[in-house]
Image (cartoon, rainbow, N blue to C red; front, side, top):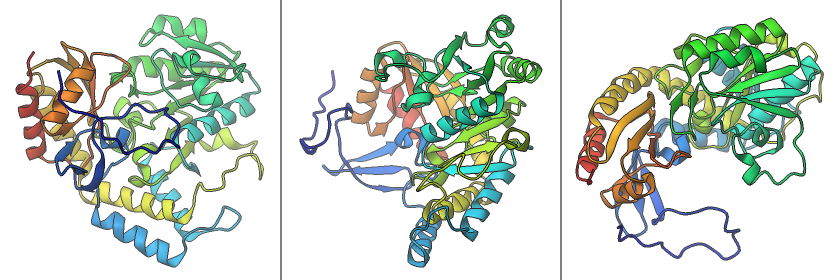
Length: 386
């Protein structure tokens, strides 16, 4: 049993909708968090994959300060050079043919707009999602999230949804018909516990959606931005969708998201068909541009691939019986409930996360992780009972 207790810091004015971990972070540097009571925690969770470059990266701080002092905000009613540069950089980083960019604020907003594009373009009213999926908590995104009926809240869903069994190629032809507007899939399902969809399954979805005229959407909100060791999991799997969504670490901790699209899926768009007040603002765009530059100039993709191999081979100690996932989106399968293991790791100075699978500890560390940090995690796990 853990001896950690919950610090009493929350205002009673905050709605009690989040279960909290038993510490309050007050500062961050690199991959380390400092707590209110003076402890240091090695962050292997990165704020749900948001702290892509860790905390206090000097290039991010400099870009933010420079842009804030120059132009803090302006809406999409005006053109901005920094917005154009961010879009160009993101399109260059993305899979080939995904050359059009719509900048928004979050992953859920990106998925809402991707689904809207598919429904408008096809004129159809059915969407196929994958069992175990998590796409967000807004109306359309939650409709394609597995198990959302427990908290959905709206009186009805905006379209009909079927859920396709994971990696079941035999079920594709039955469910993906000419009535389907879109199939939405996370190549590596994050909330499900770093569950990897087979490349062959994704390729079969690509072939079938192309045959029936449906849109293939990859939700890379959690697995994108270099987290798999490639720019996007689409490149890792060798399958290019029609639309791809990204958010989380896109701006290194500043709210930002995007929809990337093949041009042929946008030929119906006119001014006003899509919109967002804060999406594509100058602060977010300056940070997007900087994050992409840092990933490439500091060789972080190669680092992710190398250290992921270490994590997969060395983390099968203590209560960990198997490791799944790709890159820096990994699930440690535990012999005991993952919630217990997460709390015990905190006691040993390491922060990890849970998942929908009660026996998965999820790792989403910043891409700036070093070998010495892997050593700390392995030692912490080895010190826990099996």
